[in-house]
Structures are given as C-alpha cells and as structure tokens.
Image 1 (cartoon, rainbow, N blue to C red):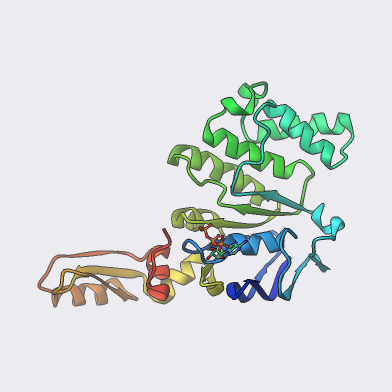
Image 2 (cartoon, helix red, strand yellow; image 1 turned 120 degrees about the vertical axis):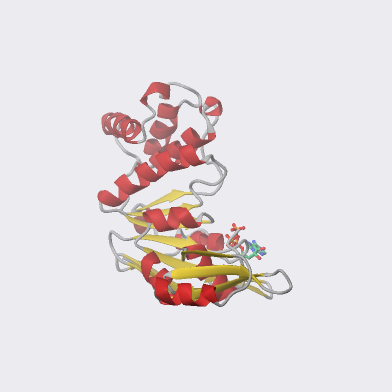
Length: 279
Ligand SMILES: Nc1ncnc2c1ncn2[C@@H]1O[C@H](COP(=O)(O)OP(=O)(O)OP(=O)(O)O)[C@@H](O)[C@H]1O
C-alpha cells in the first residue's frame, strides 16, 4: 500500500507538487498521467526517497519514506526515466552488478539474473554489451534491474518513452506479468493507451495536483461514453460527450458540419478537465 498524504514540493517560489493526495492499494497498477511539467517526476523522486517533501507524508507498507529509510528502500524497485545501465557490461553483468549492490549472495544472484533474463526475454543477447542493445531491449533490462531484489513496490518513470510501438507492446507483456505476480506498481506515462491497457486506476495530474483518480472506464463513462467531435464556425475543434449513442446521434442530426462520432477515450477525459493535451 502506498499512501501519499498532502505532499508538497517547492523549488524556490515555485510549487511543483501541491498538497497532493493519492493511495495505491497492494497489488494495484496505477498510472500517473499528465502533461510536461505536471510534477510527475518530482513526485516519483519523493516516493523513492531522492527528494524531501516540504510538507506531507509518504507511507508504504506502514513505514514512512524518507532519504534514510534503507529498510523501506529495499522493498522498492525503481525504473528511472533515464538509463541506469552500465554500457560496457553485458546484460547479465548489469544484473549481477545490481545484485551485488543489494548484497545478494553469488549463487542466488546468478539464479535470479537467469530467471529475470528469461522473464524479459533477453536470453539470446545475455552476453551482449548494453551499448549494443536496441532501445526496447535496454528498457526491458532496466525493468529487470529494478526487480533483482524482488521488491514489492515498483516505481517506473516513463518506462516506454522513446521506443517504437512494437517494442512498447513487448514491455507491456512484461509489466502485465509483474502485475500478475502481485507487485504494486506506480508508473508515469505520456501514453494514454498505455494507461488504458495496463492500469487498474489512472491518476490525472495537472499543475502539481491529482485532479481525477479512478478506473479508466469510470473516467470515460462519467464524462460520457460517446464523443462527438466537430468544427465550430471558426473551424475550431469542439467536443460533446453523451451517455448513450442515441443521444449522440440525435445531437449530430442537428449539426450542419462534418463530425465524428466515436467512443470517448482517456485523452478526451484529460482534455476536458485540463484544456490541455497530455503530450
Ligand atoms: N530541481 C528543480 N529545480 C527547479 N524546478 C524544478 C526542478 N525539478 C523540477 N522542476 C520544475 O517542476 C515542474 C515539474 O517538473 P517534473 O519534472 O516533475 O514534471 P513532469 O510532470 O515529470 O514533466 P515531464 O513529463 O516533462 O517529465 C517543472 O516546471 C520543472 O521545471
């Protein structure tokens, strides 16, 4: 269980995270969605004990997270936004090196590294140096690295950023398998479809606050299951949301211009509440 209570982080006069509350229950997969600068990375940095909050508390498994709580830090795994791999080490050596940092005995470390290499499907390149891996393979290895000490809670900051859709889908398989194993996961992402596909709940974040937190389907249904997209007289895109297709059809019959009638997406929800796109 992760319990974030009234957490604020200021950089000088600027408030990056503003009295934020959020709870992630044990075994839940939560996505943190928001545009650039919303405060997602700052929040993650506080959650992993890298930054100190100005106000509020962060609890995990009934312990308070702070920079010195090494017991709690052993229970969490971290996939940072930027690569944390040693380019000159092979896939397996990277994992063994991480195991050493967690003081995992040699034989156990070998077994864990082998099991994780199978899990992320990198057996064929286990002896390849990391600099020669594709972007998707590197991301998978970063996930495996976060799992080496078998943490209960995983924080991931944009784990699929900058890789193609095919590679991203392979990572989704790994993330779903992690969820099946009962891990509690909090992930930031810009990719709405990723949140829809993977997570139990999505927290929509804007200007340092969580503005909505619910199951993706509830977020969509509360706004209206169907969206009519059309242009107004100034040729500006307009959106109307409807609970039923019948209501939406009635509405489009009254329009003179071109329109699209489609299912509402999480992107619509986000845009509706913030007037901003996630990207
Ligand atoms: N060390 C810092 N000093 C000053 N301002 C900072 C610092 N770190 C972050 N900020 C500011 O805090 C705000 C939130 O940044 P943060 O990186 O948390 O956003 P984000 O939601 O993760 O954005 P992105 O999606 O671009 O990664 C931004 O306006 C950023 O410029």
